[in-house]
Length: 376
Ligand code: UD1
Ligand code: UDP
View 1 (cartoon, rainbow, N blue to C red):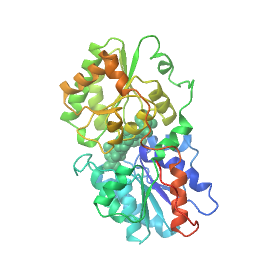
View 2 (cartoon, rainbow, N blue to C red):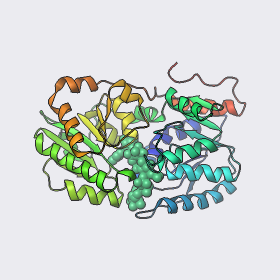
View 3 (spheres, rainbow, N blue to C red):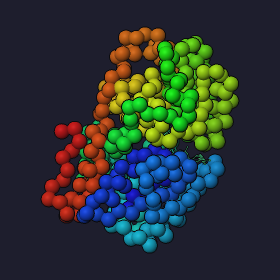
């Protein structure tokens, strides 16, 4: 049984749900918590996934405690009814942690997709770093995207049931990125025409709420003011805390476009046309490098060092001056830009879901060999 609830989990679990459904040797069930509603449903629709169970827990301005308790209570019922042999959770959200804990309470083994990411700081990202650590302790199977992720687990003495699979987001991108994509919002079809450069923005992390987010927004406005050939496109997260801040600092500027969240097809294709990405999102740090788009990370650290090492991602932090300085360098200096703008795929090869499904079959004794690790 796959369990997920937010937009990023849905994007990364969708190709796995499809891969599991296509297997003769496995029966696949899908449970969504709907920690996100509209942003989840949009992904389910694009990938034609009809969940078997839907806990529908989302409420406005939900707290970490309400998400977690509603998920655990709902999952208890679902697990009692469905009695799966394995539960699969993804990444580091409240749904992830609650899903794993609910399975543990019923002594159902857990497989953790996107395992082994670490920053080393339990308050950043908050609460995600702690969620993924706790799930690592609960899980029996750990599907790590990269070698670094496997090493992180080994340092915590987790060496059994660890598979290096690549990240399923690269599998998802195979289905979404298309040459000549036409956007449903006509503005997006013309924004990057001529000499104009699209800067794609997202910013939503809880640890950035308040002063850090205000500094980020001020920096973005200064960048738009300084570089007249840029168009800043910011699909704003539906979180009320995020929307208030974005509106307050960025509205009313002719070249800053605050738009509604894009569906994943539109988002990946916009990414393919962006000149630069500025984001605190985890998923975008994996997707943009695959398309050769430089990323400035609007956080103090990252659990995804691979693309930093490959040179396509830099940590800009949340200090206004530093963000302006780093973006200006990329916008003014073609050599600095060229050094970052090359496609790298340290996170996957598009075969992660097959490896995960094979590893599950092997775990249950239905295959003689484990899958070949990603990156060999
Ligand atoms: C959560 C995840 C975070 C992930 C992010 C992805 C946790 C602890 N955090 O962030 O890891 O990066 O999702 O987006 O699980 N809302 C809607 N409709 C939607 C989605 C959200 O209205 O479809 C609004 C609701 O008012 C909701 C609020 O957004 O209360 C915040 O959603 P929430 O899941 O609590 O977001 P985060 O915890 O910030
Ligand atoms: N995304 C999207 N529409 C948007 C913004 C983001 O489809 O308007 C996608 C993005 O391409 C990536 C995922 O959502 O696949 C990232 O999710 P998010 O930033 O919400 O969470 P994170 O990755 O930080 O956990």
